Length: 68
Image (tube, rainbow, N blue to C red; front, side, top):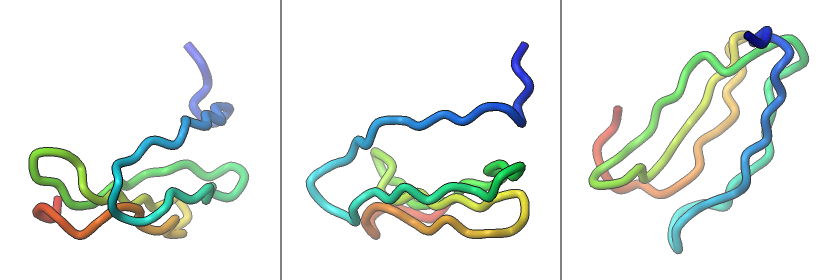
């Protein structure tokens, strides 16, 4: 099993026709994403991420759906 602190995974950009462009924000070295929140309806409309040191990476997507 991999040590979670050593993972550095970059996923391809995927998105629909509306909403904000995706960014390439990252947590500081040694920190990990510990919180996701956003909006969704039938599909995910917006996703936001927060690092373990409290740094917010921003939100990407539109404003549709309900907050989760």
